[in-house]
Image (tube, rainbow, N blue to C red):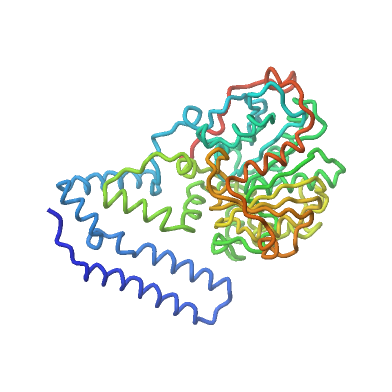
Length: 484
């Protein structure tokens, strides 16, 4: 039998928690502190409010009590087993982490690894159309997670979409750094991750120029490398796409609570000359920005209700974290997040050259997402003004990942785009002038991609060439290395 309901008690518990949360927030609002300190206090309050929600405790979660009685206590026993498993993993599981295998269920678009260096494997995907654009497409994904966010299940694969649209697609697959890579710095990521990859793509496709797409920090790395090449008089990229990318770090959203001068100096003292930043640490930091969605809802469902998480490809990817080399990480924190050097021409050097993003004269497609808590869309809009060529800016619905992985065939959500040739100075003016269109930004980008892929030529019969011979089938070996 179920416990006798007591709506008055339930309502009182819920109202008490809400009142306590509101009182805490009101008290913090009255404190005479600087904006950065206020953000950290608000963040701490958000963690407390999420952690102390009545639904997180068995005694105040009527649904969990009812389920325990209905199952004769089996739900609590199952919950304990799930808790023990998560303690062993070191994080709260949001999905069934045994349900997927990379290369079997995810990242299964056919292709070959045609380059391997200390930091990346470069994948060339097999064509699915008889003719392809003469100008290939290089994708630089974020190095903080695995590349297959853009090649999940076939139904969710942006890579597969691009291949079907007649692009010869190459993908950078970042290595999950270990002790042997703990010394690598920012320039290593630019050289081995972008410059070497561009050289291989141009050689394999015998194309003087390519198209390039960067996602999140992959876009920051890509733009920095291209600006360094431009300073040398080299312009190998004909069009640039930046997805949820920061170039102007004036407003970095919630992650800014972890970054200040003292925190960065402490990291530099520990890691600037070598060492690794653990992938689990990075994953926990990002999860804390959405504690209810990414921590407590899953914990409650697992530990109190005894229900194992369901398979979900996107959340499996989210848990497949990667390490970062300390020198690279410290440079990224100080130069971008703390001092915002990239937006000021010549203030930062890369590959021995002064970085000036205005040198990037190629047409650019810049996408942000309206609910992004990692790259606020107005910051992405400010970033779009830093490059020197014509820009089409689009604003997708949803968040940092769900807004990007929005397959066109599902016709879900919507996006905004602006028909004018010059971007308004203000993000709010752009928003007021932009048109809302149904469906995914993928199809809008495809029109941009079609305009820059070059003339149609016969699809390549095989991957690589005499210099860059196929090494192994996609998805390669680097992507399979998980954080231990």
